[in-house]
Image (cartoon, rainbow, N blue to C red; front, top):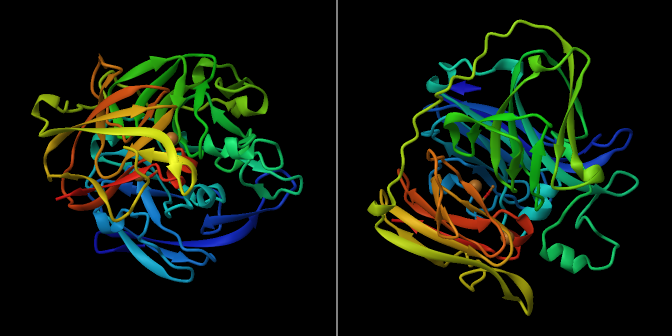
Amino acid sequence: RTEGGTDVYELTERAADVELLPGLRTRIWGYDGSFPGPTIKARSGRPVVVKLVNRLPEPTVLHLHGGHTPAQSDGYPTDLVAAGADREYAFPMRQRAATLWYHDHRMDYTGPQVWRGLAGMFIVGDAEEEALRLPSGDRDVPLLICDRSFAADGTLLYPGLEGKPGVLEAYMGGVLGDVILVNGAPWPELRVARARYRLRLCNGSNARPYELATGRPLVRIGTDGGLLAAPRTVDQIRLAPGERADVVVDFSAYKLGERVELRNLAAEGAQGKVMRFLVDRDEPDDSAVPSRLSSVERLDPARAAVTRDFEFTSGSLHGGRGWLINGRPFDPARMEARSRLGDVEVWRLTSDVAHPVHLHLSPFQVLSVNGERVEGPPEWKDTVELREAQTVEIVTRFTDYRGRYVLHCHNLEHEDMAMMAGFEVV
Ligand code: C2O
Ligand code: CU
Ligand code: CU
């Protein structure tokens, strides 16, 4: 619905029984009762209002991941929408074209609530991107990838390794499922023409990283924060939870009747199977992948007003173990940093084990990994995977909105076990 230049969406969170696995019914919690939720298409500069109606028995919080959003609509983890209540979220869309996603963000419960289905994709377009003639329409395909575990009757299991020894250990590492779903279906097959397709890959898993590959080079055109300056040909794409990658696959390089498999090289067996494409027809294709996609401003760390340190480690929590930032568990009332609006800042992130670290409000650029400068044109990211015992320096600039936001690990069990910090833009 459109109201005076604003796109208004109503999303109703409700329980539903849907078919995820062939022939079985699974009770999910979904936006509009679907898994994943509907894909929202927005346009840079054109505000979106989402009216969220919570028909679930528990409170929820909506967050637009990658959104450049005023604090009151960013889904601070304690800004709850009570069971049976509703509220409006305003997304001004003062941001460039990018592949975003939305999901639940309730403090301490994000893992289980996303696991039940509270996630969907959100695509932002703009004029710059349209002028490029990248594949569009039904050749622009959002792919939300997530792993889940099921009981024999189709019931979702959380944690995924329930009933097996060492459940607590598994939970500390984050919950893994043994079935990989793409847009809610296991090992699906998409019929494609011999033409270029844009695949918008989003890792919506609670804890599983992927190494995605088709066996032939992939042309990567975008990342969390939109288009790269120029396309980059790679053999595989690593995606930690929360990260996105836009790729163009040219299926005219395949023969009619050929099947192309998108696999996850980070796992074997069923967890290595993501989806298939069946090349089943010839069709004209006037799309292109220009050698220059966009201009990406480089943030200069020499202009940083401050350098801050954030340590991501395990530690004691409520008498047990949990995951902490700078030795402290998330306290929604405590601000770990106060940043001045408009300032450039360098944040130095260090890890014990792997943590996909996500920053709200503003995208960032990765400066260095373990002291080694990252070469090449700058890229806008909102989530960066720290591997084991790493130090990653990022540079960011908080613009447009003041208020309270969060920085957290996007391993959702780590997030729920308190690996989150509030910061305030003043
Ligand atoms: Cu994708 Cu703070 O979340
Ligand atoms: Cu986010
Ligand atoms: Cu973590």
